[in-house]
Structure formats: C-alpha cells, structure tokens
Image (cartoon, rainbow, N blue to C red; front, side, top):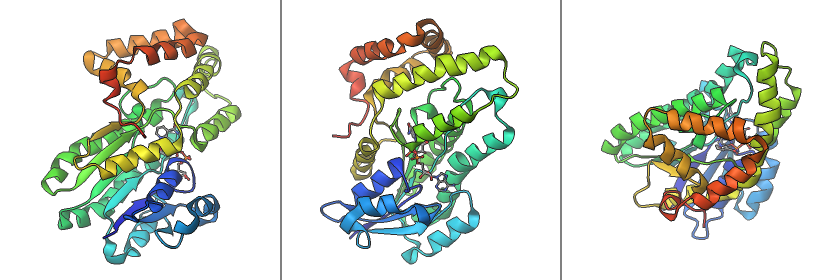
Amino acid sequence: SQRVVLITGCSSGIGLRIAVLLAKDEQKRYYVIATMRDLKKKDKLVQAAGDAFGNTLTLQALDVCSDDSVRQCISAVKDRRVDILINNAGVGLLGPVESISLEQMKMVFETNFFGTVRMIKEIMPDMKRRRAGHIIVMSSVMGMQGVVFNDVYTASKFAIEGFCESLAVQLLKFNVKLSLIEPGPVHTEFEAKMMEEVAKMEFPGADADTVRYFKDVYIPSSIDIFEAMGQKPDDIAKCTKKVIESRNPRFRNLTNSLYTPIVAMKYADETGGLSVHTFYNLLFNFGSLMHITMNILKCLTCSCLRRRAISPD
Ligand code: NAD
C-alpha cells in the first residue's frame, strides 16, 4: 500500500523537488502531502507535479511556526497517518552577530528548531503507537561544523542535531526511524534570499573591520564555494529518496562527498583546534584563493571518504 509522506516548505527549493520526485514515483509508492505556509505560492509546485497533482500529490497549508496550523493540518490527514515526515522548512541568516537583533535570531530558531520539534511532537506519538514510521530532518553540514558569519543559522542546525541524536535512541525501541540529511551548498532561493538580505544590510553595531571581513572576504568566498561545490535541489531530493528507501537508513547522511573531509577533520581532533585554524587559514590567508583551495580539496578527497556520502545517482 501507498506510504503517506508529509513534507514541510514545499513552495520552493529542496522541499518542492522532494515532493515532485516522490509523487512521480513510477510504482506510485507514495501519497505526498505537500505543505506550504502560503497556498498562494503553489503554482511552481503544481506545474512541476503535472499529472501527479490531484493523484499522488495533494496540497495543504502549514506554517511550522504555528501550533494551530500544525494541529489543523495533521487533523485533516486521514486517520492522522503519516508514514514519513520530512521536515524541510527552514530559513537562513547571515551577518556579523553585532548587527543581528535577538528578535531576528529567535525567528531562525522558531522555524529551524522549534518548527521541526513542533512537527515531530504532533506526529511522533502516532508513529510510536503504530511501531512504524520514518522522520527525516533536513539539517545541513552547518549542523555539524560551525561556519563564520553563519553563527545563528549554524546554532539552529546544531540544536536540531542534538535534539535528533537524543531522540533517535528512544525511537529505535519503537521501530521509528530518524534520519538527518546533511547537504552542503545547494542552488535554491535560499542562497538568493540571503544575498538579497545582505545587500539591504546596514550593519548597525558592527565595527568597520568586521563589516569588511564579512562583505569583502566572506561573501566572495561564499559565492566561490557555491559555484565550486553547489548541488542541485534535485540531487538532494534523490539522496532523500534513497534514505527513505533504504532498509537500514543511516542516522546522518551527507549528500556531498566534498564535505566528508571537513567532518573527518572535526572528529580527528576533539579539541576543535584543527577545524578552527583550518577555517581561519582558508578565509583569511587564502582569501580569493578559496576557489583553488576548494579544488585541491576535491582532488584530496579520497575514495574511502567519498563513500561516506550518499550519491544522488
Ligand atoms: P528555500 O528557501 O527554497 O526553501 C525553504 C522553504 O521553507 C521555503 O519554501 C519557505 O517558504 C519555507 N518556510 C520558511 N518558513 C516556513 C514556515 N514557518 N512554515 C512553513 N514553511 C516555511 O531553501 P532550500 O534551500 O530549499 O531550504 C530547504 C531546507 O534545506 C532548509 O531547512 C535549509 O536550512 C536546508 N539547507 C539548505 C541549503 C542550501 O544551500 N540551500 C544547504 C543545507 C541545508
């Protein structure tokens, strides 16, 4: 029988691609409930879904930041049965900490952390009762490794990683699976939305050096990294489908093998010094050579590390 998949944040990017890929499964193994905050933004999804829309794909309004919205959405699901929950909705935040208000920071946690927790709290009890289910969380390599000027976004992803790492142990007892997807950079509106924000930023409270490091050192190197390492949202969708279809899904799933050395470096030196100094050197001593450095990293990634990531193909 069909497995019911509920996905958050499907109006764009990774969420949209996962919804479409699963709904278009040739064997029709999935019934996709694609949710988004604002149903007025459904056109791109509806168009991409084609014939699947109304058959294996249905739409529902859901704002992960609202108790009422989440409750309403899940009560409308037949028998409240969600076999696979994909927590994808998320927001980014870039910039010097001095310039970001606590209110803005809390909004990021409201969506990325509490939004995911709210979904899990609503759906997990039914999964536990049925002794079946799979919870997927779209984390990020920034959930495992801090990245300069992404302090708050990274913290929100670390928070959800800690939450899931703790919960996964208990869920094993109930035969409920929990998997984190850990993409590196992905070309979606996420990137564009953040660059738009940056262009508007005025940096109140930040000193001139910090602003310069952010605008003239970090931003160009970040653009280089997206160019050199960026994956397509469809790649992440294919990786996610593989995780869902795996008999024994892994807890952490990197989607980009170029990031496996970064994770290996972190675990190779538990004092953290190696990671902090490597990133310092990458940013401040190589500067515009970031692109070259990334290419060297590509060459150095040995095959045994590469195999630690799932490939979209
Ligand atoms: P995106 O901006 O295209 O998609 C994010 C979606 O979440 C949007 O459709 C947005 O409307 C939705 N959303 C935001 N707040 C919401 C709320 N309160 N309720 C419901 N939906 C809400 O970006 P994306 O790259 O597709 O991001 C999807 C996920 O992937 C995010 O969790 C993000 O952190 C993660 N991620 C992205 C990248 C990247 O480089 N793009 C890398 C690693 C992880």
